[in-house]
Length: 308
Length: 215
Image (cartoon, rainbow over the protein chains, first blue to last red):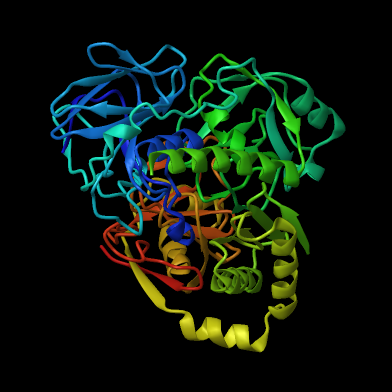
């Protein structure tokens, strides 16, 4: 069991997501920052389809009944036992040892993976939680006092200390890479220049559905669009001209024109942007987007080899 | 018809700009054919489909070639497609209490009595075009053109679950409490979404939906 002592604001059980019921209108859910989540799984020696905890609102305090390898990832997060332990690193947790995930005012989504993995039965093919529709094996936010079953596999203590770089998260700010959106032709030159040339500020109303941005008006010339399917990373522009970048809990369909789509490798950087921070957008090709994702996969693969 | 990238892991196929039974049926047929290839899920809508894939398993350029080949095969309203759709379609009845907060206003805007509006809304089966917006929310239509119901200029912050609504030539049931801009004419106790069921939605694209007045 993993026991939750301090639960944060909206911690949920997540796995890689639930893409099997989009046609019933069920959002995919899964982690808001897919790379940070995948890195936590890899460090804890877990396969890519395992379940772990997404934490919103730190601190978060837990303990495990038996010895486990744990890994915490996220933005500006640390793990504390008696001493500070690094994030983005496999850590050996002793039986009953209380550990606390801490962050800063800029921390948004933190991930806690525990060797063995959260052992709950899949619902509709996934252990991901979609809070709004109460879908998932534990369809609510975690509360203090919760105890979740862990699967066998305590992890190899020798893998403690394995680490992974948090790419592009600690260096100087870099533009968010996007591919031209499916409705790019609906946007005039001024809107397109403003979108790629100016900075946008992350609004406080951002959540797991999407990151809302304030900045120059980048509304499309033609406002009305026949509703169509949408994907995570889509930058929708409602009539008011303020863009929204869709995240894990986004609706399966949308009626607003999409000016650009954030590449998969930069989705986590958008999700982790704190209210008030600025984001800029750049254009890349599809090949560059796939290459950036391949780079992430290589670093996850290297961790998997190291902890095997 | 256009096929454009929607990020590096999806394509958006668009083939129309209106709400129409045959376009929505074609979207479903394309989505079925794509999912049968096993590269990833598809999301059909009124006149478009999003086709998803893993760019490491299927090169994006190859995905586009596959999509073109598939569209050439799934011609508009092909006989086989129509027969398949007819065989799959079910009729789902939604018992409805017609007492919504917008019932009188919609009747008045439509130059109908309330009883006349109820009779008109319940008189025909609607096609479920696709699901989206919320889990279990099916966009259904077409409404009788005599029913005049533009979307609300200021959407409600909270529409109660089970509300039967009309807007812009369409009708639907809200599965959850949610914000909403459609006009509310009734309510149902039918459960539109149940995560313990598989599939979790009561309705699926292509179903015929009938609203049955109850007290």
